[in-house]
Length: 259
Image: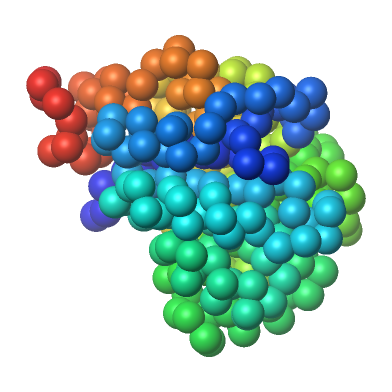
């Protein structure tokens, strides 16, 4: 069984990392290269870089930021934002990404997932889903940075997207995003039950206990977090030590002064 992963997320707007609550009230959080370097040194398994305004502004991902981060760190990078074609994905991979997250364009044209998987392999294709609860047991998909509603069910879209070629699901709860009140375990569990590919939990991490719950009860394969790392509430190393002590199988070989 693969070990569980801890993934810091860099939401990028312009050339800065930003953070908000439920996709609004955006504030500056720092320099992307400096933050990526810090998280890699702390033992992050991967780093996720999301250009959060690319689709809304109808432009491609900021490749310069990706290139500078890839030249600085030696851990896998997942990059998303503004990916509308196979050529866009090729550019991002050439800039240094290991995996590419596709969101808005795939929701509008699902065939894009097939095209990308056929060209680069499904291991490179991540389907990013921004989900908002619509009833007690259902969630709808929003695109373009959470600003455009769709008719898609998040659970059905995850299932369909994985069948079309996505090798991983990056699942963000808009309701929980930035609240630090924990992941949406109902959403996470519903999607995990619907797909056979790894699922990354995103939106709501406020403590290590939230991550333990995502792994233990939500059956997540990885957890993504931003605010608690950006504001130094905790560190990646401290989180991974706590997860290991809680019985979660994470990589600790790179951590300094373990245990």
